[in-house]
Image (cartoon, rainbow, N blue to C red):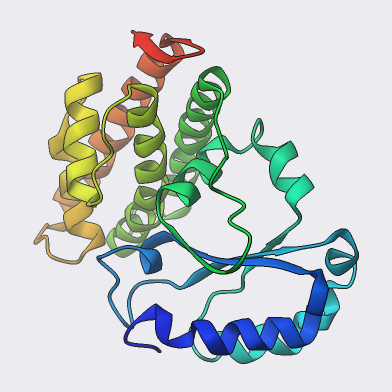
Length: 248
């Protein structure tokens, strides 16, 4: 694992260049690895690899390279074409918005720079994701069989997705999006009138710094689910225009 992501830029670029040659359009590092809070050994190294249409049709060429980098703790990259990105902004605006917020162009064309997001579609995905996560949390709770460790794990896994949704909601409100997880929670709570305390306790659980009894964990989860439901109702009624959010 590299102490700094840029230490591997030259090598990973060389590897994908050898595989794809002129079919390699760009390599982009995105997410926590592209930010100031990168932690070696903990932060993920996520890459977007943009290929030509011919390159994407021969993706099997990259199997060995991807396998080799996975052994070095680099996540399997996302492979896309420029046309796929352009045609997916209406379907996955949250994902591309969060990708654009924190990235470094390692090689080639900066395909994220000019991306723009239609507020109505972004709001719709936020609503859809929140409602989908409610169903997931309900199902997940039943599958935990009430065991504390499994409820903790459910909170840890789900919270990451909510932070991405929160960032998209702040974008709709035309509010500056903080870099830290806790700051994002506090900002969303202030803008949408939800209880930050529950999500901050879930953050403690995710970061393994909270001391909670089994009964407390169950109560936190129950409040967590209720607060997500409340936010989904608020987002369902959110009014947006082509310029952004204009009220609830």
